[in-house]
Length: 191
Image 1 (tube, rainbow, N blue to C red):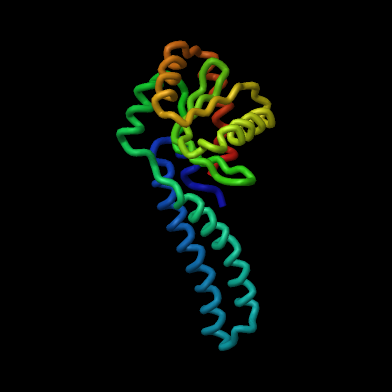
Image 2 (tube, rainbow, N blue to C red):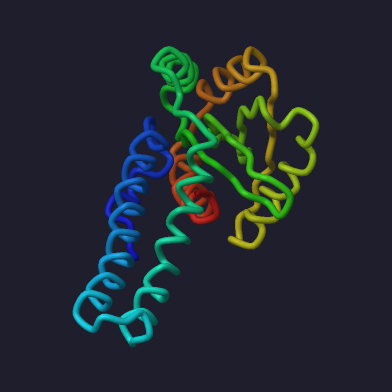
């Protein structure tokens, strides 16, 4: 199923909006599956029919949608104050907000990342102990997407904001062009 609001990925408020969308989609898919079952049961008077098989098959996308809902429900959107602080620190630098990057071990919430000076710079408070794993995962993702950029993750918000201001002062048109391709690759691997 193609997401109606896929272009929202990487913007402020994405998690809150996507959570509502996933909830509605999950409820509709489960209602359809149970509706198919009850339609078959009420018309034929038995559970042993093709309608029951169709209902079970309809549970597959509903269950997949429920898993996506559970994954998103673990994270919260940025507060307005945090968003304004990140926006002020990097007003010209291309930015990506509210990304959830999944690896084979765990999911990481990255509230903000910017691109400039051939470096993808991000703030991820939750990655304190696993910062090296997240950096290597993002470097591999970028490498597979044919991008050559360094990755730097900050777990201290003040240090990130200082670095974001430095990058913002030296942003170029080439950085802006490259950021679009890099962010498309990042969005493709995030929830």
